[in-house]
Length: 127
Image (cartoon, rainbow, N blue to C red; front, side):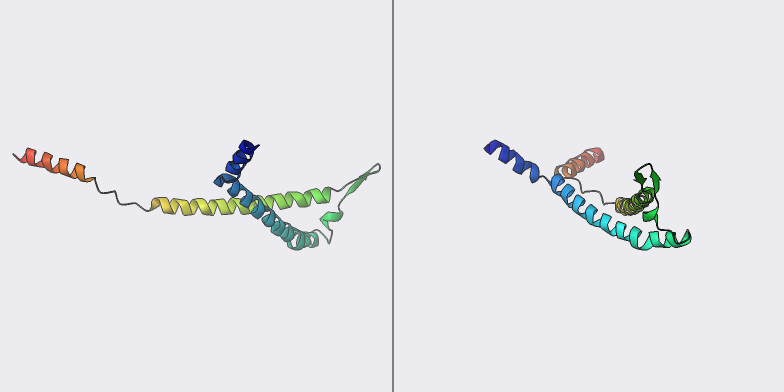
């Protein structure tokens, strides 16, 4: 049992697991923001454009089943907005990384023994 607990502690304390947990929490919060944007701002505007109809109420009855295709349309719009924002964020991060890489770094000074060998070579060459 002690080996299992030790292994679990090592697994949990890895940086990748903690980063993943933080990403999931932030992703959940971000999803709530995008859902609010879609439900409270974008969908009412689209509803006005299409004649005051609400996507939530779009459905068709087949036999005794009600197929709510409006909710599906809303979920697709949510997905597309989340994907668009993530794309823009990643594109911005990549652009920032390219700028960092573009800054040339000064080459490191040669080691002292290399300098000494270079001096010896130059002295021998001059004789």
